[in-house]
Length: 227
Length: 229
Image (cartoon, rainbow over all chains, first blue to last red; front, side, top):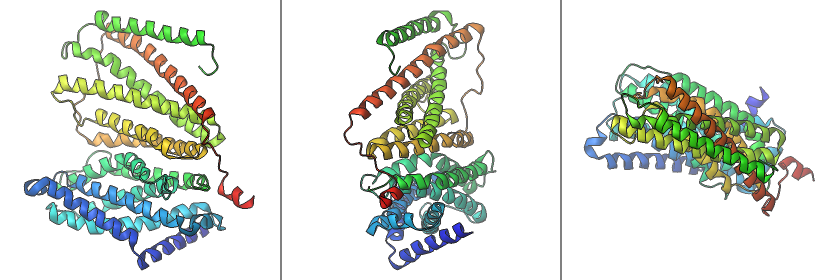
């Protein structure tokens, strides 16, 4: 219970900070919106009206904006050596991972809540009547994405040398998540019957990265040392 | 290969070369021409063994990465690094031969069939492993982060396998081979396996030599020990 309490406390601290000075949120949301706009522009009036591929456009926006978000939230811990202080605090180290995960999850959910309506309008995405299915797929997807992003932001991000490589690692490891999520979104939008291992794969992805984050976050952070 | 006499190494590679010669001869003259695809089907004898060796090398990356996280010995990191390089090489062979097959079988260089997509994602996962490494310092941190990435990437492999099942499949589900084709396939598997193992050891040894001469290796103790020093 104390781990959960500490994790919630850390998440609340990050979100309070973000509320006062929403640098990460602004950057994330604006990048997501811009990506959808650019891709919709690139497709042109005829292409943007096509429902197929809407999942891919949305996910492209989520991936790149999300990677920026994770990089930004981790780099904030470098300021004034806040990360060292956090590691020395008398709390279970896994609370640090889960706290960062929860705050990142909230920011990514905010990203999805803003970018999806933009996608609905520009791409003429019709999700009326299938809101529940769409939301369920989106929720499962962002949980796994946030877990993977938090883990690798802790391992790679927030340092000068690690800058840019977070996106590289995150995009590669998130490919199965992207593949399943885009296929499911396209089927939901097309009102096609669901088939195949889609939802179980999303659940498995979430489980793998939550457990991997719980186990690997601490040794990865400790290796940062003076970097 | 580590610390082995040069004569043994030379004999190993000579034997591998001879076995490749036998395999190429079998694929060209012994194996019959496949009825549906014709001569292009012979690329299968390179494609399947390369895929099997690729999976084996993925397993080596996984086990060596676990070994490094557990024991923090540089040997494990060198082995994982060498095996990851071999994964990318063999995956490139699988992709290239798969694309040639797709071009002649279905008229396109690329189809989003589950198997080709799976190979592509695998290639990306391990190419990123190789791209990440030079960006991380010191070497001890590079080894640990690479090991953690290697473990997570391997755990991603079954997820990739399941996720590509959502894609429409035009790849044949199973391949019927007559006895001569099976013999040819086995004759290809042996030299490919020797090439895979030999390359893993060769690269591991090369990375060990590079590590020994690298002056940038300033090991950083874990944070807790720093504060208590």
